Image 1 (cartoon, protein in one colour):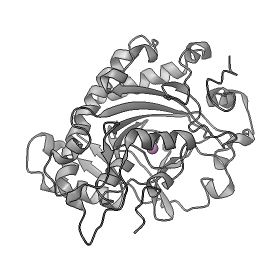
Image 2 (spheres, protein in one colour):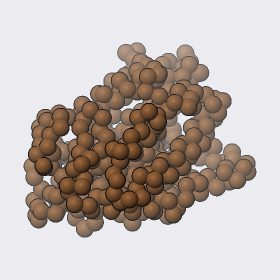
Image 3 (cartoon, helix red, strand yellow):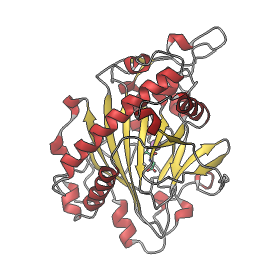
Amino acid sequence: MSCLQQGWPEPIIRVQSLSETCVSAIPDRYVKPPSERPEPQPVIEEANIPLIDLGDLLAGDDHSTILNQISEACRDWGFFQVVNHGVSEELMHRTLQLWGHFFYLPIEEKLIYANSPLTYEGYGSRLGVEKGAILDWSDYFFLNYLPETLRDRNKWPSLPSSLRETVEEYCEELVKLCGTLMKLFSITLGLGEDHLPKAFGGDDIGACLRVNFYPKCPQPDLTLGLSSHSDPGGMTILLPEDHVAGLQVRRGDSWVTVKVAPSALIVNIGDQIQVLSNANYKSVEHRVVVNSAKERFSLAFFYNPKSDVPIGPLKELVTPDCPALYTPMTFSEYRLHIRMKGPCGKSQVESLKCPH
Ligand code: OGA
Ligand code: NI
């Protein structure tokens, strides 16, 4: 069964099973070239991404401070964490825990959902389909939530038994939070609050969830849990386990390790908002480092534009001084390129750059 290829260029090996069996050395396929390993670029230990409290906003109070903080974070960092975001802490905890149980089911139970590169839906162990690629030290489960026509609960794990309904409950809450953030982004870009949401396709947006599992790694200095990339979609809301660090965000030629506040969610701008905002808002590279002592889980919720609307710089943000930086492309077309190559820094969004 472990040789099941389903369209992948090589037999799929589960990182979790490698982690359980390889005691001292990781296979060559996971060893990154020296320049891509965690070490060569420095880590700025004392820094952290901005923390924004959405409490006042949801209570309807004056929110000029919050708007300034969001604007600054999206222009400068491309990343921030939010607290008092309206998503129940109990639900966040329960969802993470259920996925932890899923990954600890017997392998046969998980292989029912083995995925293929065509849709990525299901249980996977690699991104990108290039033969011979160096792989990341992680397994994942990917599922579609919106549009509803793509939602197929039968492709979601049937065990643990409450997982499917919990995923729906969690995703519903996150769609609401993303709706709020979209309006805030729109306002802080100097547009009406519905402008950016409309450019995303109004009510027909896309949303999917990727549950990342980073097993313990005997040689964490040689590999990455997730290679450096920017998120291809609109925005991402990440729920990491709060007691295990791993996510690093690019800051110039250095990296910043994200220190998550209790019950916070991490928000980051994806390539589609960078393009729509004509690069006022940045989709910033990030990566995940693994460690030998602790495994780590995270839930990455991707909020995306409707797949068939061309995404290009909004005309209100194009001026003689700031000409349009990107050629429009639909998200479905954009995503195809990413699926071929897997994580590859910011090369995809760079390739849309207009030849000025
Ligand atoms: C992602 C991602 C970070 C993490 O899934 O795109 O960047 O900490 N995840 O798992
Ligand atoms: Ni990411």
